Structure formats: structure tokens, C-alpha cells
Amino acid sequence: MKKQEVRDALFHYLQPHLPGWKPVKKDEAFVRPIPGGLQKIFISLVDYNPEFRFSLTFATRIDRAEDVVNRFNQAPASAHKTTVTSMTQLSYFFPGEPEPKQYSVKTDDDIRKAVDKVGAVLRDKALPFLDAHRDLAALDRAMNGGDARFDTSDPTNRAVRALTVAKLAGNPRFEQLAASYQAAIRHFPEMSRQQLDQVIEYLRTLQT
Image (cartoon, rainbow, N blue to C red):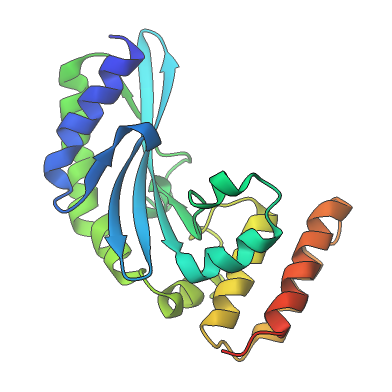
């Protein structure tokens, strides 16, 4: 199989497991709207021809949070609409197993069988998880609750977004969290530290 054929098959077999989700192939994801944002299930696919490996990543975008963060995003403005607030890997639902959680496939039948296994995880774990993490309060509890596996963004982006979510959610521990995240990236490049500092200063001016 060619990579595009594998990708098409994944979309085909995953769709029945994702009622209410729209396939958006240009984003390599299934998408659904939520109040004030959207959620995406990204399909990652690696070609080791003749073997292919796929996994899923679960993302939530809260527009209010991204409007703040993207004030300090140096990427082109056209890219701002695609940023996400949190990203959780499929391996999150397989605690104790090796990471990353991937499925190896070579044939259409392999893909169908692998998606059947993934479908059970979607039904029993991942979709209820996404239903429970669709607003600022829920994301604040998860992102600032000490579970490092919840969000797998790079450390700077994770810090920036976790603090933004905390502020917008009215978390009374904002200053404590800010100091903690600053300490966590104190050895990072100056650009990363400056970005976090700028976001913190801006968040301090917000009335929530």
C-alpha cells in the first residue's frame, strides 16, 4: 500500500467510531466544534514501507486562550487559527505501556483490525475524556494538576498555555504557578524565557 491509501483507509475505518466528528483530510484530523473552540483527533502516520505505523493525538482549542497566546506568537497570523491549547497522546490511555503507542499495519485488513482495537479505546476512554475536557475550568484542573502526561506540548508552549488557562479560569494559584513554570524553563534559551515572561506580565493585567 502507498501512504495515501493507508491514510484514506484510516479515515474510512475510523469514521464509524467518531459520530459527530467531521473528517478534515487537509488537517489529517477529525474535528468537532465545542462551545468557544474545537477539538481535533489528529492521525499521525509514518511510512516504513512496506510497514506503516499510526497513532492518534487528541487536541482541544479554547479560542479565548489562543487569542491571548497568539499575541506573542511569532508565526504568521494565518497559522494562529490552527493552534491548540492542549495535546494528549494516545499513550495517555495506556498507562504503564511503552510510549509512543503505535499500531503497525501493512494491509487493508491490518488497518481494519487495528482500528477495531482503537475504536474500543475511543468509545470507552478517549471520547469520554474529550467530553470532560472542553472548557477552561476542566483544562485548568488537568493542565495545572500535576499530571505531566495530560499535555505533551513542548515545555514552553505548555507553560504559556497552562498559565493562560489558569488565569482565564480564575485559578487563585496563578502567581504560584507562574513562579513554578518560570523555574521549570530557567535553563531554556532566552527567547523561550522572554516569551513566558511577556505572557505572564500580560495575564497580570487581565480582569477575569
